[in-house]
Image (cartoon, rainbow, N blue to C red; front, top):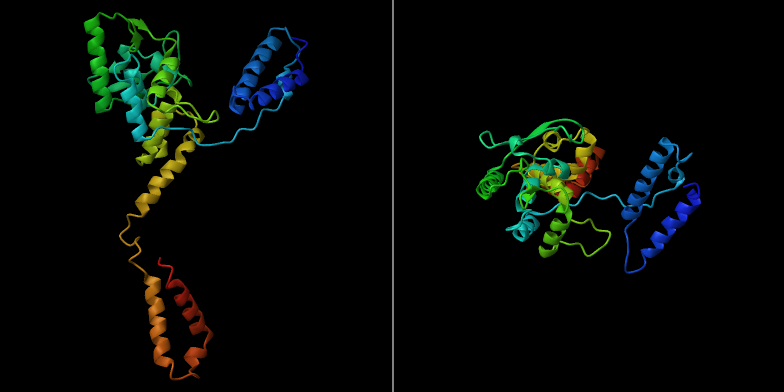
Length: 307
């Protein structure tokens, strides 16, 4: 490990960047993720006494354009669900879209956490697992999710599945492989991005989809924060632009927001009428006054703007 220096890592980063020009291109995000993993290894090495310093700490990451997280449109949701229908991941995908649960929360969900009577899901720490911020929260079963999960439970019982966990494959709890199964469904649905820099559809994309569609529907950001389990409101603000679009549409519902109402145009017409009536008197003190001239300019210019 002593042979690995910041210069060595910079060379590795440059090589990965050069590889970006080939057919086996990797994104800047991928390279940065590799640097984060390497940095974590060295942090542990320093803690355990295998290294005196972390050489990654002085290496700059590649620049990545900041953009809103990808989320699925209503049409894309239908495409994905059609591709998943009949597979073992259908119920988990529906749950992810309808609740915004994290991947670990989905994979650790047990039947004891699901209350069909009250139509609730309790996301809570277990003996061998805890939520991201150690906080429990409750999400609600939509009618569509209730039907899917209730049918999923009925099939479990009928098939004799003895697992306490909600999502299983061949009777055993799903721990791994869900990403590959979802990737196959995404490809079947025609949602796989053509550009390597574009974000793939993952379970986390479905979480973003849940929050984004809530924002588009006009749900307040504070409520979205609660439903998503965000500890910081700053995290929820990434969906603010979608909420702003909704608010803008609501403002346009004002009865006087349309083009038909032009109060300034009326003022402009009034000025024109006054001008006509006084045109015979060129030396009129009203026409020569600064107040009138300013009103005429203001009214005339706004006549074509509307409100």
